[in-house]
Length: 102
Image 1 (cartoon, helix red, strand yellow):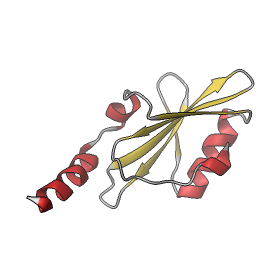
Image 2 (cartoon, helix red, strand yellow; image 1 turned 180 degrees about the vertical axis):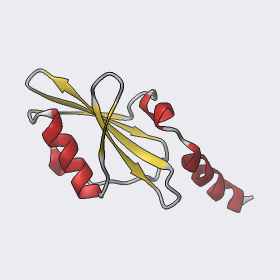
Image 3 (cartoon, helix red, strand yellow; image 1 turned 90 degrees about the vertical axis):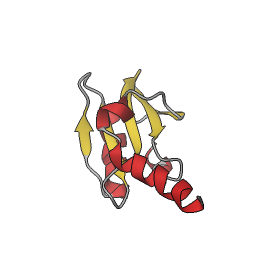
Image 4 (cartoon, helix red, strand yellow; image 1 turned 90 degrees about the horizontal axis):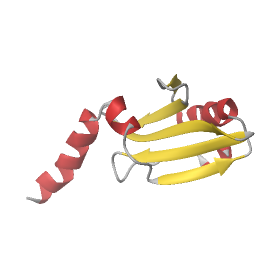
């Protein structure tokens, strides 16, 4: 039973689609005076990921697990002269370096 409790979240994280995670409510919201492109490039660089563009023109960076399932997603939108960073967790134990980027 414990094994199932450990495997199930990992299996679910492996099945998350980008759209599922993009439409999820943010778990945390951060604000930065830095522009969107600077923030997403930094998050991507420190996590070995890439920057992608959402349908609405905002930018995002996905952090994936060893099975290439999305564990975290950073959605970055313009906010005044700076940025609004929404952290969306699909897998509760997902970790990423990011705070130095904003």
